[in-house]
Length: 115
Image (cartoon, rainbow, N blue to C red; front, side, top):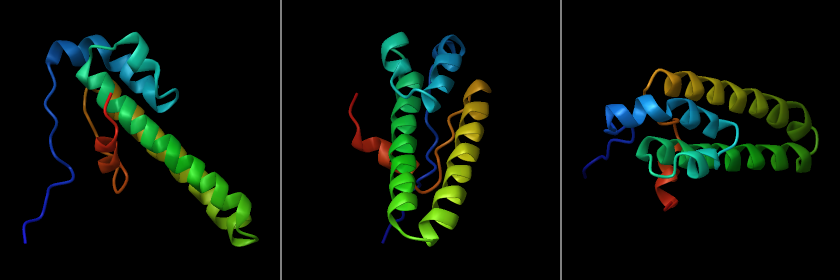
């Protein structure tokens, strides 16, 4: 059985990275911004996809934190929110450094989106 590498190295054009890394980093705050401001950027699109996956994960954590009594209120919600914030900060820093960092466990789901 072959194992796929989930932390695959993405290759991007150096000019694309340099021109669009700030817009790509903002994808972790407003995921669709690179789709509007840098619509031809592969670097921006990959970060937009990952920003969308992070948004979906944060919504799931938020709903679980609200719906599940006690454990959700005091553990899932607060710790999940802190985890999402830390992941977003790491992703923004890596993006501003011109790197593509696939978010562990959930980053692979960005391939589900075609834009």
